[in-house]
Image (cartoon, rainbow, N blue to C red; front, side, top):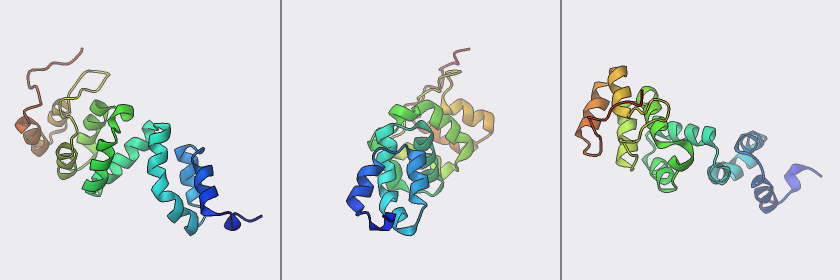
Length: 151
């Protein structure tokens, strides 16, 4: 039996048991599967609470300025399994200032600390020389400018 003969409902049911990486590979098999599974991949990431793919989709959405997807991810509490502080601290260095601003506007917590050193995104922005991001963070009342590191 060819995979083309399997009804969409069965494929969607099977895809629930796949890890996000496997589902992504499966969706690249042909155009039908891509269009069918691309919408389910986000649900799959939340079902399996995949840290790696959760971060990927968040950074990808930021780079593309996709405010609706970012808002959806934050509303679905993506930071509970990807780590709010570490994601924002890394975002300081890998997304544009406008993308970082979108994350803040959509509800990301700028006072969240990354776990290793206990630094806030403000410190990473200062160290990276991201002046516009520093200005955004200083203007946010949630940021504690007197908070030190855990060192």
